[in-house]
Image 1: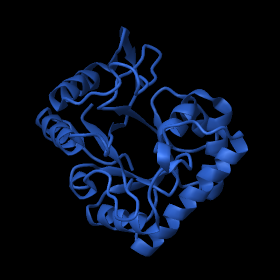
Image 2: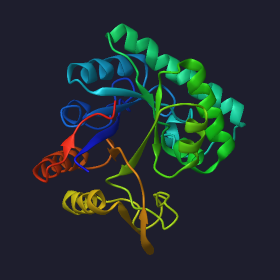
Image 3: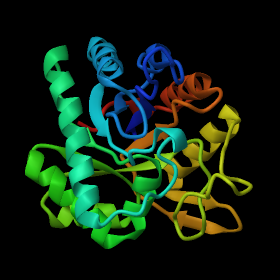
Image 4: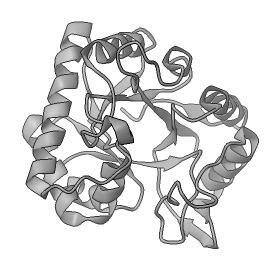
Length: 252
């Protein structure tokens, strides 16, 4: 593989409270998943993050999550699939409105946290999200965790799908992310993260915690913007992949 996207979850502050260094990350990534008022963000945070993304020529995605800022969207909130679809639609619409004011546009959707993990395993939830996205705009793409139900649901709905792997997260032998409460869930060492990525790009095989490597497909690499050392990890990925002949470029 000689070309891949680098994305990060950004705009996850609220009011005067910032989460991560978005300005620095937006100089390194090629796509930005911007929180849209569910797990984090507010209109002004959305607007300012969109402006920064546009100024840096970064592709913009909506990053809807559970309406659970106290849990940062990392807890499953019991909801029927149609309710989830409407929640996702409302958040995408909010970011689209701010994007119009910022003179840019939303190109894709990537569900956040617990919602993204649930959509990876629950076909009904994945279908509800895909239906909502398609109803808002047939031009919106989906960025999904590689090898999940959301990929299948989006393709079945006729939505363009791109798949991602995570630079800073461990994988189970089933191809899912190791829960954050368990050992091996997070990778904090940028050198180790880059070595794993280079091996994956060469072989298509992702190491797992407690099992054999698994085959995944990916057009994008995610670095969580709220993780300690996120900027340095993104910088190392960009520099070392570039030195290996891999171009960082948006999938859209």
